[in-house]
Image (cartoon, rainbow, N blue to C red; front, side, top):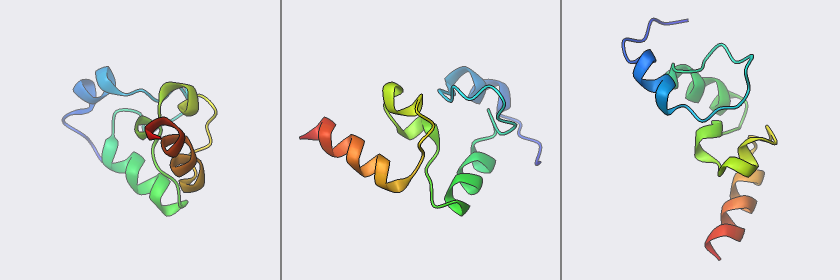
Length: 69
C-alpha cells in the first residue's frame, strides 16, 4: 500500500466503522479498492447505512434517494 502523508489527518475524519480495514486513512486506496468492486467508500454513506457495510452503488442510490426525498 502506498505511503500517505495525510493519513493521520484522514484518520481523524474517517467514518469507516470496519475495524479490520487496512485502508483506513488512505483515502485514495480506499476509493480505488471500492470502485474496483463497483462500490463506494463508507464515508459517502450516512452513518446508519455505513454500519451495514453494504457499499454497493444500488444501496447508495437507495439510501440517499430516501434521505433527499
